[in-house]
Length: 388
Image (cartoon, rainbow, N blue to C red):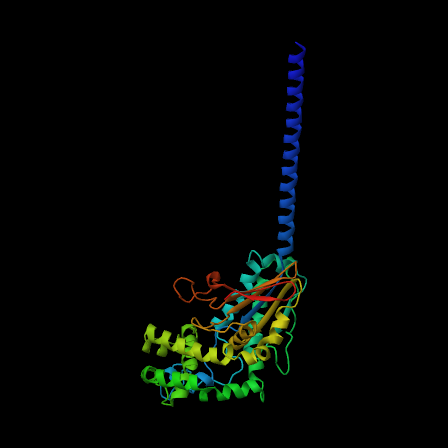
């Protein structure tokens, strides 16, 4: 009997010890789970976005002298832009934004204010920062972003908008590529003499020349024919975003004379020329984009707006290490977004075509986010990892 009692006593003790062990393991598991959740929450807090810088190319514009020099004076491509009385527009104008371009920039502002990640940052800001190229179309574009942004907010939540942007002279931030007397300017002027450039110009000359003949393009040598693919593409862009309110309505002389395949071929050559000018000159990359990047990457909370040129974006991408440039070319109001995180890291995004449908390529009137590409991750120590 005493042995039986002893057996059951030992068994009960074992059960108790087992129960205690199970409770201990359960408690340890709960503590471990709590610690994992706490660490995950801490990491999320550290990775939360505390600021965003939006850098936009100016909105849609009318053509300038660059585009017009490609076309003969009696070509439909030129004459379509003339006033009703036959007078040509001012192709030298510093501000040649169209009403379509103005609406685009207001739409960018509304998009920022209503964005699920960026909108709260806008509303919590007391004052917004604004930097701009001194070119009038860029300054008006930035101002219109501010107008659209503030109009999308309730009046009691609107932060202060600067009376004027911060500009730079000489402009080594937005237009280092245009500063006279630099080694980079010499590189660009010597580019047509480069063997690779000359070989490509010779190869594509017959096809480009045949296309230019359809649109009243001037008859020039092989190098200029390749170089001028940039102007023909820009003219197509001017047409495709043209304004019904312009004299004669919307413009389409070049876009209708060329097939979609021909326009794409010209865009591909234009991108190659721009790639050689910006992405292909690693020795000039820091000169082109370092000062712009330094300002875009400044660690700060809140929202900053930058308004500049497509060449400014290409210069920035060159500095970040992007070495290729293929269609689609940067469109009007193309956007670089720098998302700054609480831990000091950042992510760089590019939307090259905000006003084209991401699926069909059709022109749209509100920002299409489907084109966004993650370009780079920036660690808290400033180390950059290229993602493209």
